[in-house]
Length: 345
Image (cartoon, rainbow, N blue to C red; front, side, top):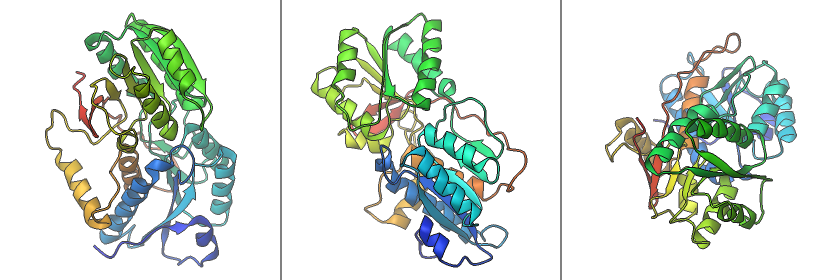
């Protein structure tokens, strides 16, 4: 494989003359904001996807380049920048992961003018022309995990805690319907602005409501801050936690978990019963060869970006949006600094 090349900054790409035969992929990743801790591994995996595409001959012989757009800023800022760059001919396709309010703003600003592959779990609802969502909807992502915890952990009283934007709102609606169907109760709910904020009010809600389980739709650094405070309050050993956004970087940031009560239904690199997943291991090894021994941990967001870049360069530019194959529901338990997948079937 040729020597790895880094992505271009968006405004560098705007100013530097573009070779006529290059296919440009705009990579909208959160270089700032609550999800910024996940960006290093995502950038690495996007670079790996690009290098492998070029080693395979590119896109009909045309090499691929990445252009970064910081999707961790306010939605209107990200959308305005992406639209301006598209108008200037800087990129041919957009791949990204970010909060769903940014996703909605980008959908509206790009308005079917370019293919847009959105890689993480999404908020559901109507999908605009030209957009391909390869993650799961709130119900697809959470239903099996909630059912397993109700049945196997006797989690009957649930508190719902999240950030106040479109994805957690959709998660809470879906989870409430699923839990009621399972005969469980929602005994408290709180949505908070993105941090920095004091997680004490959220922890107090769990304690006051006498919840035996909490569904977390916090993201990034806010999720990390809550889990740290939850452990300091001594609730981590007796209250089940389920998160739809906890991935490997977030687990490292909280120092891992040894209680057996922290679960995630975000797709992860966990293997069922410790069994080796050859595709997973192979991707990790290729990443390590490219990035070296100090490579950041591969996480679910990064894997989504890898798949998104590889998919995006194979798609036609416009027209009918292909229908992705729904991902299988996942549930993983944190064990130290890693996840072990739990069978929900």
